[in-house]
Length: 333
Ligand SMILES: Nc1ncnc2c1ncn2[C@@H]1O[C@H](COP(=O)(O)OP(=O)(O)O)[C@@H](O)[C@H]1O
Ligand SMILES: [Mg+2]
View 1 (tube, rainbow, N blue to C red):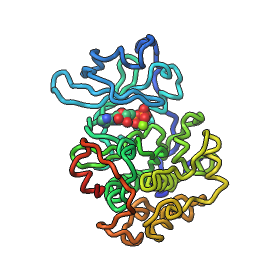
View 2: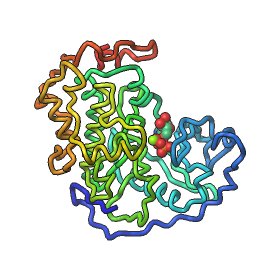
View 3: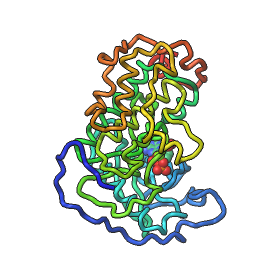
View 4: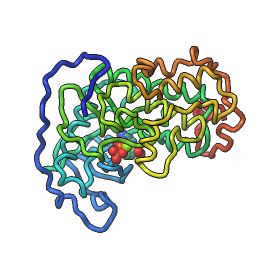
């Protein structure tokens, strides 16, 4: 897949990434959940405490520095994919992408190291929950949601200006920290200007519900693929329905190639038409028609969304007890 970066600030020549071959047997391939048998062990200077999350490629642990006592999150690659060289190369690319960025809306990377031949990254440990968790509670009011996502938009604009495309913006990769921050995480599919991933297998394509049409069809992508995905996230968070529901990957992905983007006001009452139009532009099949920046997509004023407004009677009917007062206020529960 060819990659075009919105802002041509990075002009390095393409380089191939090389990493040591990973020996999967080191990580144990017993019958338990991947990484489970690592808990209680040490990885470099860190003691692994518990699994925070397991995804398509990685396992994320909460860990503690043995001497400093500092809590961190450690991400490493799953033992069952570790023998696939393309995964370890992609993992290094993920670390390089994060390392090239410095933004309050992006989870910070402390270090990248190998334990033997196993790569792992040491990240800031953030307590909180994902936007996906919050969306399971119910629909979110648009003005509060846009405020919540402002740091994400700023982080994406920062990444694009530094030659990095995230390519997998989805609710599960947006972290709502207990301290009030909203952070973008998981640059596992990121593209970094100047580096090539000669063969990006299909498994690196991203999540079909949020992926842009140009990613589906293998076209040139730029920062506007992330703007598409962010628009799809907002559409679902506000309406409670995915923009292009389907029974399988092919149906979900191909509908966005063949059909015009849905209008939020058609599925959700009390939405200002200007806001509905803005989101439809964000999901336009033609990247040229999308807003140039993520910040532009979220601009409340031009979308006719006043901070105190609600997007309807049905939004977030039930708030669980653990929803913090900050989020309740923000989302007007
Ligand atoms: N820095 C972090 N601090 C706390 N939890 C994290 C951190 N990074 C990841 N996690 C947790 O681990 C899960 C998986 O992480 P992610 O980077 O999205 O990996 P994957 O590529 O497997 O999806 C996240 O959904 C989140 O719950
Ligand atoms: Mg993820």
